[in-house]
Length: 386
Image (tube, rainbow, N blue to C red; front, top):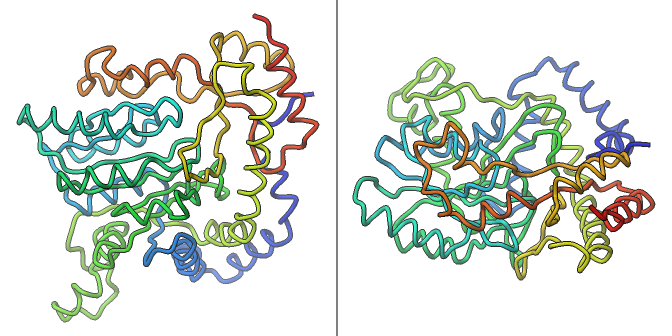
């Protein structure tokens, strides 16, 4: 019998009545776009991580793009980001004509290596062709990046910092959320994320009121903001006066209603994920190339549980034959993909990234993974002799 990689239906069974009621309420209200549930969700998202403002949007990629648009990125600007992550992190950069500069990762956490970041910034400044502008640190697989060190580097060089928490919303470092260090934290509500909706969705979190207002404008075609309107004596619907180039990136009210119900059990699900991660580590440590490492003081939300194995492809085939799904995150680093080749460093420059891509394998992980099913996964990994 095949196991689910991520069992979304197990969660649905837990809160089915609440979800169904929330969806029905939105349908009855008729306020399907930017309804009151969206406003309430934004309030709760900000409160969850102790921030002042949250602005929802259509997806996590738009969240990144909106952040860069708010800072008016342009050709000649450099954005530093890891290559070992999903392509969305880097793809938004050339949308605005800017250039992604790829940074290597820490071998234990897979997150941005501050030493590599510093070296890449120095290299760009020495070349003199690009203007270092933004750093995008990714909370890969659910755990926080090394924000104290990354923030220190950003401050030293006058760079803006985005925390891409698409996989890590809810993670903490020394009790603080990424938004405590970052100018902007972005996230995704894709269904497979730890906090996912039943479609696409995303959000931006910040402590900068003016920045939040600007992003709220940009998500609706650059509409007039309250601050704009006060100086222009404009009293009509704000969407009918566009002051800046924006996009259409609104979160559906139904998705907000679903997320409000999921937020009620989110803390409990994070705890459950930690128990499962600990159990994997106990069963696998020492028997494979590596189990996940977590930064000191870090609290992961365990979006994925990613191991390393010297014979990764053989192990994956072995698991598949036993009805156990697995996933390779990520088989091809961004800098090696066709669209990014014009930005890519020399082969071998990102050694840790390239090595990790050859050995990583994600095992089933979700809050409702039964101990017996997890034992089956562990036994299958241990039983591989290929």
